[in-house]
Every structure is written in structure tokens, then in C-alpha cells.
Length: 65
Image 1 (cartoon, rainbow, N blue to C red):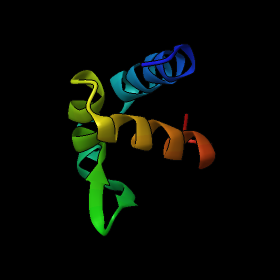
Image 2 (image 1 turned 120 degrees about the horizontal axis):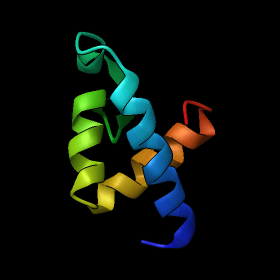
Image 3 (image 1 turned 90 degrees about the horizontal axis):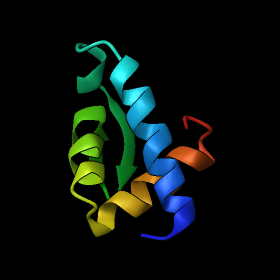
């Protein structure tokens, strides 16, 4: 992961920590017709998957992080 993605990852993790448990089940994105909840995004980001970079960039574009 490059430096800017690492910064987005840190921002995501800080925001995720403050999200109520019930809200984490809500869909925040749709990538390639697949709904992404906060929980799914968290798993992808923590595991540094290829989908994690897409998720982080989309969350940045939507000004969620």
C-alpha cells in the first residue's frame, strides 16, 4: 500500500471505532454490484486486500473519510 492509502486506512479505522455496532451493518458502498457494509469494509481494510484500496478511495470521494 502506498502512503496515501495508509493515511486513508488510519482515518477509516478511527471513524470505524466510533460507529455504533448497529450502524456497522448498514451498506455504505456498492462496488461491482456488491453491497459493502461498514463491517465488510473493515475486514477488507484490516486484511489489506485489493478491494480495500477501492473502498478507501470511494469513501474519500464520498467524503465519508
